[in-house]
Image 1: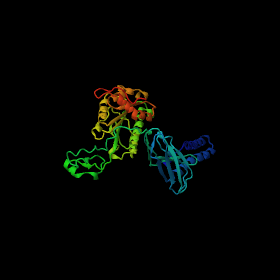
Image 2: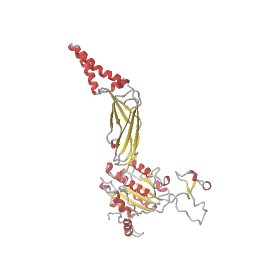
Image 3: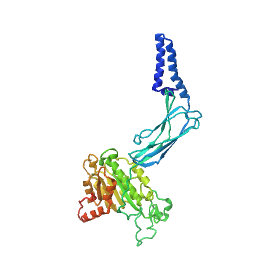
Image 4: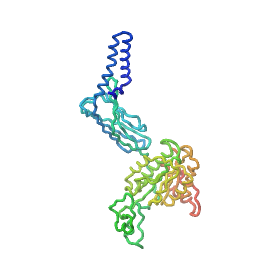
Length: 436
C-alpha cells in the first residue's frame, strides 16, 4: 500500500488534495454540501490505491536481438514476447525498454485489457554509429489505473547483449608481402644434423591440443613439445593499432582513433578472408584470443571485430614491447598509427627489422584536430617510417579506407618505393605511398 501511495500521479494527488480542501472549507464556512463533494474526491484516489496495490500481475518476457553483432550504422531488430501468466486481466500497462542513448530513443508500448493466457509479440529496431558492447534492457512495466490516478513500476531482470563493430570496407586484393611465413612454425630445418624427430616438434603454446604433445621430446628437453607436421602451412599477419589517447585528436566517431580502428578492422578482415592467420596487437600488447594459433585463418573474423569493437583508449605514453619477444612477428605487419612521438621510432624500427614485410598507415592527425606536442604526423611521420624500411602512406580526415589501401598495397606503390629507395649503406629519405 505504501508503494501504491507513492505511485499517486499528479492527477491523483490533486484530487486527494481537493477532497481534503473541501472538507476543511465545509467546517470553516458551514456548508455541509462541501463535505459530500470532498468525501467523494478524496475517496476516489484512496480506493484506487487499495485496488491497484492489492492487484498481483504475473507477466513473462522473452527478448531476442537479431543479429547480435552488427557493423556501426547497421540496424538490429529487438523482438519481444510479452505474456500474462496470471488468471486476472490487467488494467493499463505501459511498457518501456531500457536502451543506451546511442542506440536511439527508448521504445514504449501500451497494453490494455490483457486477459488470461494473453500473448503479444512486438519488435523495434536499434542502431548505433558508435562501436562498442551495449546491453538492451531491462524492461520497465508501469501499471496504471483507467483514470490515471495511480502508476506503479516494475522491472524485468532479463537483458540481451548487442555488439556494434567498426565498419568494414571491402578492399582490393592487391598482393602483399610476408606470405612466406608459416602458421607458427618455421620451415623444416635440414636433416644434416639431428634426427627427423627433432624437426617435427616445436614448443607448446597456449591453445595447442594436448593430444598433440610429443612425450619423448618433452621428456628429453624438460618442456612440453607438440608435433607440428599436422599443421597446415599458413600465411600470417600482425595488425598493430596504436590506441593511445596522446597520439590522436578529435572526438566521437570522427576522431582519428575511430578512423584508425575502422582502417584496422577493414585490413584485418581483408587479410583473414585471403587466408592469413591474423593477430591483433594494440598499445598494451597482443590481444588475448586474437592470435593465429587460436583459430583457423579466414574463418574467425568475429573475434577480431569483437576485440576492435570494445578497444579502449589507452592512457599510457609508451607502447608495450613484450609481444616482440614472442615467436611469429616475422610475417606481414600492418601498422595503423596516429602521431609519431620520438620515443616510438626505436620500437617501430625493431618491428620492421623482424617483419617479413611492413605496411604502415599514418593518420594525419592535424586534419582531425590539434596535433600532439613533439610528435611527427602526416607526411613527416611517413617519411620517418620510410627511412626505416616501411611502405608508408598517410590517411587524412574523411579519406576512404579503400583509397588508402590502394596507395599502400598496390604493386605500383611498392615498385615506386623499390626504385626510389637508396642502397643499403645509405639512409632513405623519400616518402612512398603518396597519391599517384
